[in-house]
Length: 611
Image (cartoon, rainbow, N blue to C red; front, side):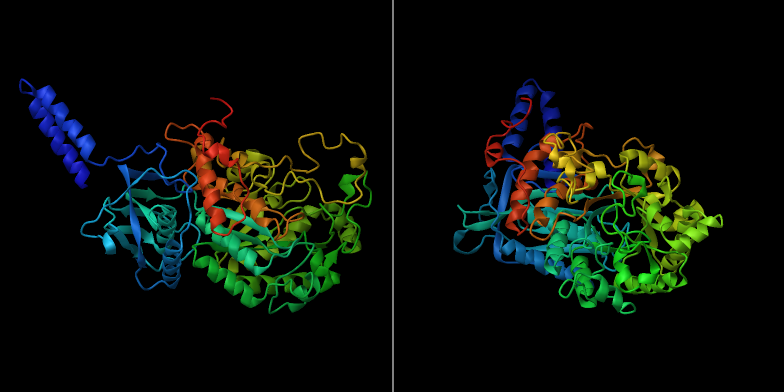
């Protein structure tokens, strides 16, 4: 029982006794008023706080009147030894706090703790000297479903602060929350941190990810690291690295060096083995898993530089007849699909799977499987002969997946595929080729309908609905000489020339319920979601603004939900908090887009649509 709870119970008992006397009512009232005026009270969980945490914690209280304590210039994090990643995080967050210069857009209405037992030098008042981490299991691996819960307590006088967690990864989430409760106070010429705070927190979904496509656009390692760092700040835990695509194969593999030598965009635009090790270790220091994707058998034109004999329709124009979309050779420019009839396909594929699973320790291996285009395989002479003998394109895909899936599983991995492998109308496999026990499907079409189809078939689902979570949408198209633009009314519609338009605003991202419309039993198969950053029209110059803060919106929805305690959507309440979080994020070096003018934040409610 806390001190406040004990005082509260004693006062209640005294009030009850006093009310039994002639003047009891008056005495009780005095007692209660005395308590309210002299003792800090927990703030309502839904009340606006002077400083906010993003994503919003499951449970957070800040005793009233709100207090803050100065952070000592010798502040440090006391972490248990035995986990190098946690020790790295402890050092990083201590440095972050000491260097904090974030100034809230609205000055926090708090009282700074006075001097006392913990008073600092020169009468500056109490100072917080350290934060203690208490972890039950330091050796729990960073894998899907690991416990990320934590509790954070900063005592009212600022005398002590503690993060308690089941695992090192939960402790990292607590460190991030602690860091967001600190700010620079110019009046005090000091970093302050909230005092009298209690947080109990855990994620709704175990899989909260961002997919980045480096097959269409090469991103320098520094940009990938900055993105992962921002993910950790948002308590996102999966960096889905879509490494290769038809446009390029930028990953150097020891067993198949020719793939990158002849399939990348060139020198300086490849990821070496050392690059991968750096990225994976950097991510683990932040509690972020790195899930590699090598998309096959579609989207593999880039393999043709090294192995032209393995790739159907390689080098062909992707859309032979613009008036006949079904005859296309690819979903977009860059035609080429692995030929499952070529025996060498499986030798090369085996080498790729073995190398990639050696480089990436995560328990998931994303094998792609999307957008296998009938026109490409139909144009291959060897496949034409196969079809003439009674074969089908679906059996051809099943032959490929039936060979690849056991290889993935043999490497102690769960295979992840895009939904197409099961749901595509033209080319798909039977469930026997991808057993639900060893397979997860990632949905991207038809909103909740395809999620429902996947879970009803018994598969776990990662939700990346293009209607809500595709961050590239709404920026037009990249195809050249499009005569549609001869008509000035061509993009008057809501698509804006983009197949998945319009642009997905942060509110649209935030409001999406990844398990919406499912039964409780079906919803249990939804492991989480990912926002997707496809990069036909994105490079390092615009990456941050395209991703942030919209990815932050998904991060909160999957961490603590998008509804308040009454069940109502809380996007209106989230607006000011996201503005504040975006402001802090920019201060941390991420070029996130603004969501409102500063005028709105300084005038609460004045920018609402309805008063």
